[in-house]
Structure formats: C-alpha cells, structure tokens
Image (cartoon, rainbow, N blue to C red):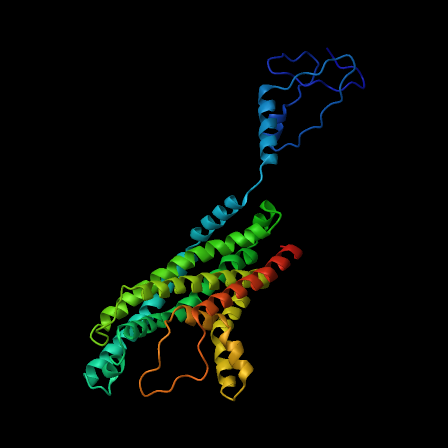
Amino acid sequence: MTPQPGQPDQPVQPGQPVQPGQPAQPSAEWQVSSGVAPQPAAAPVPGVAPQPPTRRAAAAAARRDRLGSARLGFGGVLRSEWIKLWSVRSTWWTLSVLIVVGVGLALLVGLAIASVAGQTGTDSSGVTGLFESGDSDAQTAQMLQLAASGIGAAALVASVLGVLNITTEFSGGSITTSMLAVPRRWPVLLAKALAVGIVLAVLGFVTMLLSAVVVSLLLHGVLPDQQPFSSQMLLVSLGAAAYLAALGIISVHIGAVVRSPAAGIAIVVGLLMIVPTVLSIVSGFDIDWALTVNDWLPSQAGTALTTMPMDAPAGMPAPEHPAMTAWQGGISLAVWSVVSGAVAWLLTLRRDV
C-alpha cells in the first residue's frame, strides 16, 4: 500500500514484509551502528494505534536510565586515582629513588663514622669517646639521628612525586576527563592527595626503619649500648612516615595551584632547600624573625619528627634557641597541609580546567 500524500512512511516492524511501493525505513540500531544520524520519530498518525517498543529497545532504554542515574562516590574516585598513580612508570622510578637515596645516604654516613672511629681507636678524644659518653638512651638517640641523614633528600623526592601526580594531568589534558566525571572537583583533589599521602607514609616508615637498622649494624662498636629495636626507633619511623606523607599532600596542593610541573618542582625545591638556607644565613645577623620563620618551615618540622631530643655533648654549651618538639612539628605540617589545601580547593573550583 502506497503512503498517502502528507502521511509519513511507517517503519517496517521485525518480521513484517515490505509492501510493494513502500520504502523500507532503516532501524535505529542500524543507523547508530553505521554512523548515520537517527531520523526523528514520526508524528503519530490519527486512527493508528502506536506500536509497542521492541524488547531490544526497552533494554537499551533501561541501560540508559541506569547510567544516567549513576553517581561516582568518593570511594570510586579514590580507587580511580589509586589505579592511575600506579599505572604511571614515573611513580615506580620515583619511589625506587626515594628508598635508595634515603637508605644510601644513611649508609654513607654510617660508613664514614665507622671508618673515622677505626682510625682514631678508642681514645676518649676521638669519635668513639664522643659517642660513648652517653648512656643507652643517648646512644640510641645519636644512632637514630645519624640514620635520619637521608630523610631530607627522600623528602625532596617525595615532594617531586606529589607535584608530578597532578601537574602531568593538567599538562596532558587528562584532568578534564576527571573533572567532567566528578563535577564537584574537590573529591578528585582530595583523592589525589590521599593516594600520594598513603604511599609516601608507607615508604617513609620503611625507609627510616631500614636506615636505622643499617646504621645500627655499622656503629655497633662505636655505640655499644644502643638499642636498635626500641620504642625510640618506632617513634622516629612513624615521624618519618608523617613527614613524607604531609610533604606529598602539600606538593599535590602546590601542583593544583600552579598546574605546571616545572613551576611546582621549583617551588618545593625552594621551600625545602633554598628558603631554609637563606633564613639560616639571615638569622646569623641577629635577626630574630628569620629564625622564627625558619623554625616553622616543613623541613624543620620534619627534623623535629625524625630526631629524638638529647642533651648537648659534654664540654659543649647547650643551644640558645630551643629546638622544635615533635608535637610542634606535627602541628606545623598540619597547618601547611590545611592552608595549601584550602587555596588549591578554591582555585580548582573557580578556574577552568
């Protein structure tokens, strides 16, 4: 039957033969699979009952409804960022360098002191006499202080990892996909910071623990009364874990602000190395504020978390400026993390990606 003028062609139903003179209309599935734009639905014809949807069309509509109503929770965002962190080859290289640098520098310091102690012998005026002047707790604190020699360099590597974790997505453009999947944006920033912080906390604990074991074995003759596996070692290892985790979180926030790998790395290097050196030099000219500012930098907070308090050696005066305690170092790092996170959150919400 030929269509009447002004009447739209009726689509052929599955199993319905095409009448002579009636053009066959392609199905919606064929149009989508072949890349042809689907034709708009025809207006209902008066006097003709609408055909019920096919089973395939009903299933497709149900799938679209489920996908449209799905919402990505924070657990899914965190899992996605965790997978992305470990899928990048630079993460494995950076973490390997972190362990090698942290433990390697502690190993070199231990070998150097053991060598000097072997050359000077057991003379009380030599290195051995200087270390043996304290009791068991003092010798353990001295051993842990030497073991933490590589934590500063490991902290720099950890900061680079935090910066690269987010700035590479901005430079590559993949951050747009993440922000479109999570329109609120802040879960992406928080998930990145948490993923980096968790990894660096574990690596910081392991690095400090290995460094303490290595230095303890090397200086067993120099520090005979030390207690390597003690509560002091556990506290210092936990302090190193907190320090590297906080630096990783702060670095992610800095990367979210500058959005450039080069600029982010330059800022963290200046914050950890250049600024403390300049302030230490300036404080030598009796400028009190420089010393106060230097004490509240992340590097000084890390030193407070990775060293045990001990008295000055015999014959040496006590320092005029008291050192920062461990709880003060923890507060300092917490403030740095919160403030940098607030700035990164505000800029991430207001700027285009």
